[in-house]
Image (cartoon, helix red, strand yellow):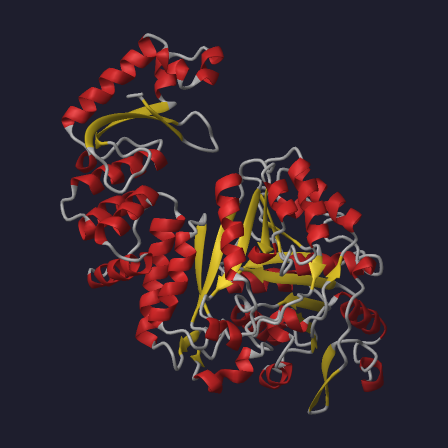
Length: 576
């Protein structure tokens, strides 16, 4: 019996964790099991041809909100050309409301609802002995959804003992080159957020600690660029989180590790440990979602926002940990205006990134069962995104989509921090008001419909909000030089006098060797003057803008931008 496991990932750079677990769990009984991963951006007819060429007897698909449409299209055509093929679906998108899915799509033979390793092996073992199992035989397969005549039946779900699962990365690492790796040290969640499925997957269970360490070390030694942990709240067990983070911090690697963290659950000991984390080693994704007490009550979320803010400030001021703060628009009881205050709370904490998401009514989530209570209208097809509620209209959510894009371009890019902070002060507005005003202007120009290069964004911000303000022009010039090491300053951002001054000081610094006062690690390299000149750039400013201050005095300032470090750019004041 020839078995194929497959998934249509969201991007080429993603590796499917679920498929890896299934392969590892089933490989002893079915060593010839084949894994083929694709992505939703590929031509579906080519994916179909590849799967047919493998000539499988059984094929299993891993299903999520981002790939269910494409997956259904592929299996429809698979059944047309291979009607004898047994098709099995699994994954979060098919683990709830499966009766309707089976009724609508007779191409689906079986669904494994919930954790799939043990049930999938049971089903394969049964199919190995008979291609058409009897109802009593199917009734013995845990978590299985299947047909008996016109009836659709489902068996009780199994909760896996994670100590029985072989590591997902214990072998076959050849597929990981240039991939983002997903990893988990636990399953389940201790919380009951009503928009999330994790609270319905049972109590938190943990993989053996030493197994996790072994796999993490193996992946880190491979030079994987990024490992994203999918544990729903990585630090819900503080002692275990401390042990794993201590281990990860100690590794000799350039891999970055990302975790979903309860911001208010960070202990003092853990925060102290994080001070030792190397630059670019750790990234935390911290869910805020809303600061509206009425909203938090409606979605069953309990967060000590004061403690969260206090801990985030420690991350910001005392560690090199990157941290992302999440918001969700479209939640119950949160209007456009009230969402703005949630945005301000997050913005003022100055995270590495702000992730502005939109409520998705996932199948199986408690909130999906309560949509009538808060007047929620959402899309019929995945990802089931909110269109409007009793508290926020469709036009308001549409404007938030524009704001989301602007936040991504101007804040999350990290390129405009000095300019944005100045504009908030200049306009005397809250952060959300600045982005809302910019969104209205952006949309009026039709800029939301067009792609813009990152270099064009400097000019567009000046066009829409500049008002011929010389201070803003200087801050934009600083942001440009502090983020674009390989490009000369555009002519609209500078002047010919500035250029002459820059050339003069650059030559002098190299000629007399004083450049090594600022870039000492270049001296032993014995580089040519031309090579040295590529490692830094000088810029002249008309105001004392560095370090940032809200009302900089008008005075010439020469700054040297050090581009010799691949990880970060450093700035030196040549006037000092």
